Length: 330
Ligand SMILES: NC(=O)c1ccc[n+]([C@@H]2O[C@H](COP(=O)([O-])OP(=O)(O)OC[C@H]3O[C@@H](n4cnc5c(N)ncnc54)[C@H](OP(=O)(O)O)[C@@H]3O)[C@@H](O)[C@H]2O)c1
Image (cartoon, rainbow, N blue to C red; front, side, top):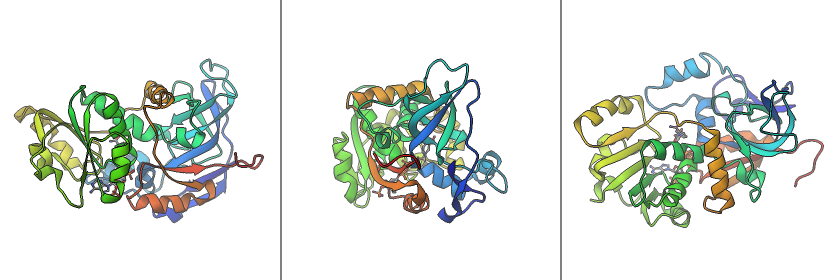
């Protein structure tokens, strides 16, 4: 099968189209024929080993010390189940699914095996593969942080970096959970963020939300520009900073913040759960959650897609469409 392989950390050009062995499912796995995958900010971080401050060594231990341990990147996939292992009971051949492979990656390929108990769910019938594949990464991250941050109906939520994959999901989910949402983005993305349900939009090129006198119950920082030291005055008593992106020094302060104030900082990797994918699919069917798609690239142009995502300017999600040799574009 075709796969985009990288054998060393570096710029987008380390990604090379190769032919590798097609996987076959273990007894508890399904084999997915890929129709779409994505290039996430996470893929670009792992490809280049560009990590938040203090995570350089840890990330080499996780992903491979001198070269990548897993040569195929990609964590989101949408496609059709082509085969199932003998013990699989939840899915059948022909099911249209979407999934988040998370740390096992491997989605930049024509086929991918996933355990049936992994983060795998039936594709919402009203979404194309392109749209469904954009649900998991941002959606599950925002859901997990809101769960850990105990978001309540009626609370004031600010999403910093509201136009990215996590931000566009966080704005929509916070609104769905009954919060009053303020989105922080650049001028060009203000309309997008408002259309997703933000009641207020702050243009970070013109105004610093940490210094405008407003305060919030929950601040979601996906841009890494609002560490606790900078935004604590913008958090109400009992407020929570959901630090989706933060360095190790910021994380080390977390216990001290809890001990010395009524406020909390919540950080670390988001949990990946199949039930969250099913929840996102239900919201998508009810048209209460709409994955935001910026650009689409053919599989052979993943390198180009990585160059674009590396700019840090994407809006929502970047989709990679995969055409198999035996099919024409649908
Ligand atoms: N903790 C976890 O488990 C977890 C999970 C997922 C992601 N993450 C991390 O979270 C971060 C965000 O991920 P993502 O996929 O949402 O990124 P993304 O899609 O690449 O976000 C890009 C967006 O960030 C905005 N942005 C850039 N600088 C900004 C600033 N100074 N203020 C506000 N917005 C700004 C850009 O908008 P403009 O063009 O308007 O500037 C762009 O729309 C990444 O660093 C990722 O590694 C962590």
